Every structure is written in C-alpha cells, then in structure tokens.
Image 1: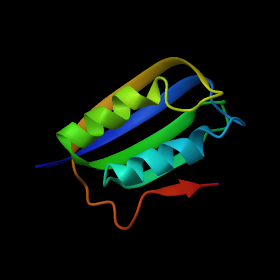
Image 2: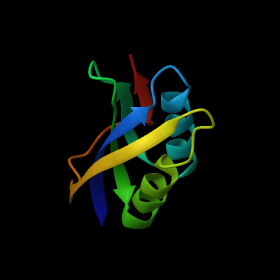
Image 3: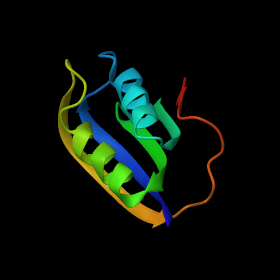
Length: 91
C-alpha cells in the first residue's frame, strides 16, 4: 500500500545542501515527491511510496545532510494521492 508522508523540517536547514541531500536519498529509496524551502526558514518534504521507505526517509532526515542542524520535524501520514514522476527539488 502506497502512503504519503508530509514533513516540515525546522532548524538550520536552508543554505546547507539539505534539499539536495533529501532528494538524492529519496531517489535511492524509490520515492516520488518533492522538497522545497519555505519562506519561514523550514524545509517542506512531500514523499509517496511504501511505509518502510517513507519511514527510512523520515529517520534519515534528522541527520542526513552533513551541515544541517535539525531541531524538529513535524510529520503527517496519509493515503497516497499519486505524486507523478521522480523526486524533485522545487525552487
């Protein structure tokens, strides 16, 4: 069963390559979705795939990008809505 995971990542996560690291890791996990910087300094991630791969992405997001400092992650799990294409970085 495909699921959707929406994350908002707080901390020092902009300007440190966090989006690029998230996208690369999500692609290796076979996930669809997107990652983007928000104007409030957070990073927003929307990913769809199987529960195990989504959980792996969620766990990785706390420590994955070398220079990022993650303070907190808010998450929401839902049924998949069918995000098309490969995982992408949105400017």
